[in-house]
Image (tube, rainbow, N blue to C red; front, side):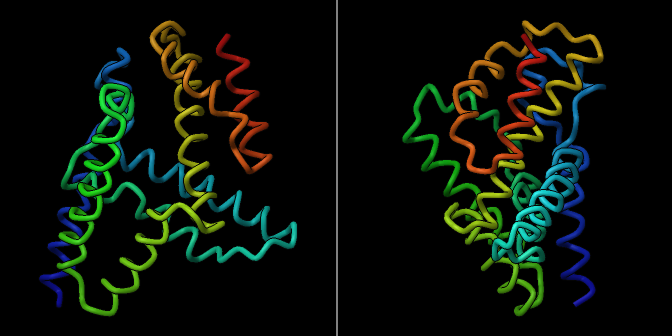
Length: 196
């Protein structure tokens, strides 16, 4: 069992060295580009805050499940790499199918290294996240979008020209009103206003 867990962790460790390709594509230097692990940490922190706030409002939110989803949401990229979602515009249907299959097969490969009950528990939560229907999954999905806006804003504050992120700003500005979580919507709008 130690070998199985160690094998899983060694593959997951790659997330610390996997840079987020969208920032490289936009012109952020490799030295300044966040890793997928950096991104996942911030999403998990945002998810925790959003889930606790939802619970305080009286909504039935499973905080443990939400945090597990946040930790796992980009784990497949440790074996499949990070893909900038802007490439989706060239073939939306094929991209969606490909990315869906890629994530499912990559996570199965990773969880094959874990003991049965652990693997089953994590796979069930990952599949729920991937279905994008539960309140917990929606919190993580919106935390993911917000973290990217937050990171983009950080790059701009550090001196990267706004023009590098014009496509990000356009896409986020078009989708911000679709966010269900009012806190996410308000923070996103505030950050996007600062990019103009």
